[in-house]
Image (tube, rainbow over all chains, first blue to last red; front, side, top):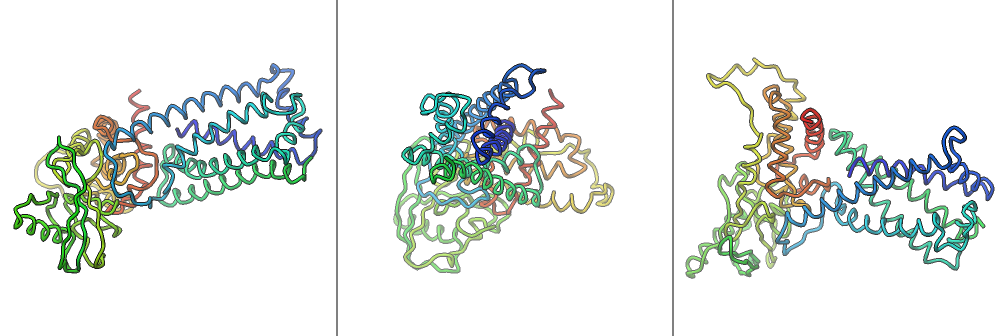
Length: 212
Length: 248
């Protein structure tokens, strides 16, 4: 859970930063998208960076999903009779239980849509793959507002997921003392907020006509 | 004060239990929670009914026997307090109080509110000890221990093994209990020879007993009557990784 999660967090931060190229204009954004494909050429083969990322992400998603299923299953078996009186959570990561599982499923569903939309372009009006800028503008067009709403909803789920996930991964891998645990919880909250803001600004800018 | 109690009644391990309502009057606010249950049981016995079975022993918060989930919270609403140290002044006239046993597959109900916590004993047997030559007690200053380590080990050693961490955990994990023992012994020079076999053995016994996995929600620490912190879990994770790498 922790190692695969950390790898995906690093990807997400890079992805979020890359998206901001859209504010530079159509040409710069498409150059960036093209650059990802031609990175390292001619020494490395075409799309070598993308394939490293794709294989790494597929392995991470597989490991993350498998760990999540094992943990959920163990939790289910560990409490066969539920409490009649449920008290609200009061732990340091209160609410994380539902946030991680249901939020994780929401994020997974979103990723499927996101790939069909902006990678494979199956559900995107712009089929021309090199025109990444055009595809983003088309998918978040004001009349396609449910797409934007789903995107923002998935982002909220991602934000809560990261707020618990980042410090929980540090707890598993590094085992910090009480002071550093608090610091990592603050780092997790900050990273989650920055990631949500950095991703959300793109569809919002398109929907409100700042980028067209 | 007059209270309505809804208590889990289950006649034995095999039978199916249910919540049963009782009304108790004239409860003194100076009574402890367990004394209130004693009064209820005297009334039940006088009426020819089966008294409510619950675990208790020292009634001074140090033995770890008392184990009631009160209104969904292990050991009730007061922080850093065992059930036996909880007093009725926390409640007001007319309150309804739900009382349930620890809920975990690894802690099967024996009767009513009493659960079998021998799964914890099996975890201790799998590594929660040190091997030391017997004889007369060594001088206290014979083995120097840094003050910070002694303090951290003492905080972890405050664990009374009550199982509130398991009862509170949404995953039904015994991680905090196990980690408290690993930290307590692993911080002391006497605990070093078995440091790696201890963590591997205890984790295996924990998983074997059917406890869930830890997802760092922190509910355990919030429910712990001895306020054991989540840092012991981080320490167990580190020790486990080193031990597993060495064993591989």
